[in-house]
Length: 99
Image (tube, rainbow, N blue to C red; front, top):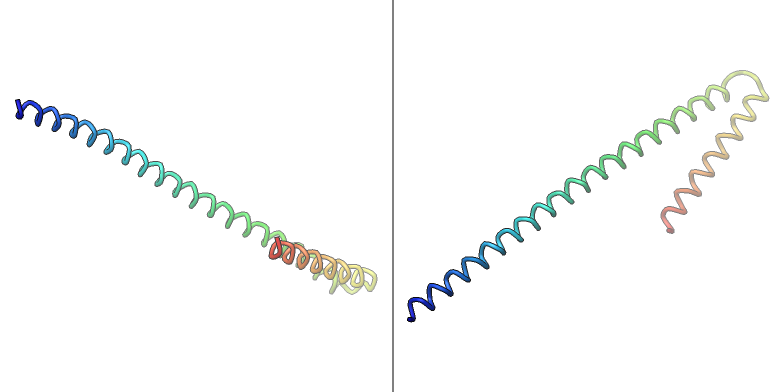
């Protein structure tokens, strides 16, 4: 009688062990998937920042060329554009730090 009870308890224990093994494995796989997604998002954000910086650099180079073109009106307007853009970038940067 005691052997039957112990065998039943062992079977129940084995069942719960199998269930918890599967649940923990699924949770671990989900955690790994989330980590991979987070890494992909970070890489995508870094690429977007790099693209944005490249675009800003191109704009700055165009304005610098206008600034040194020899035409006084173009020089003046390009200088104003550079100052305006620099001011806008500073405001964006400060808004990001305060937000």
